[in-house]
Length: 160
Image 1 (cartoon, rainbow, N blue to C red):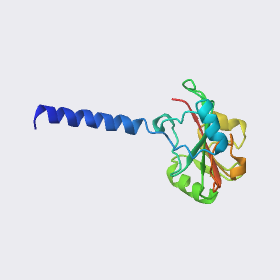
Image 2 (image 1 turned 45 degrees about the vertical axis):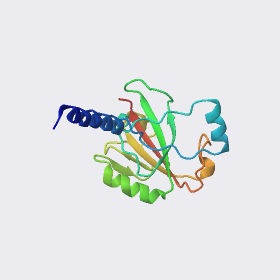
Image 3 (image 1 turned 180 degrees about the vertical axis):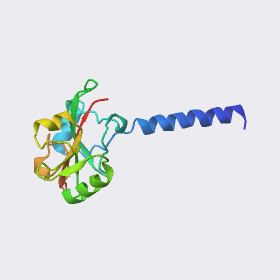
Image 4 (image 1 turned 30 degrees about the horizontal axis):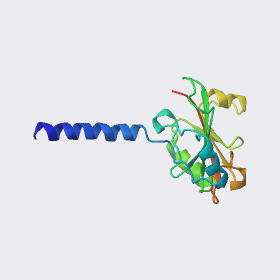
């Protein structure tokens, strides 16, 4: 193989690898009228890269919000909220198969480590996934056109 072709393949592979690593954890949903106006006047929240989040995103889910906004310092607790058009039971079944070392705590509607004590305060001390039914009317900050949303998924993790 000639040197130019080999170099092109290597560089092309690096670019593809970089694009995969930098992929957002979820897509931004379509904007509603308010969202389009906000986007014209100021930047929308940046969606974290999948590699920056220690928990998986439910397939086909959409980004809703990130708290805190911006780039949290390493070790800071982060809440990433996703939404899905699938019902909570379907989302919960998917996470039951994909979260190793976590179990479902029905009363809190959360997947957490088995030693979770069931208190709200302890959720902020460990990675977890909470799953709740929601409706389009409850979307916050109300920027998105998601007429069929049924589930809110909150990924609680520590910034890398």
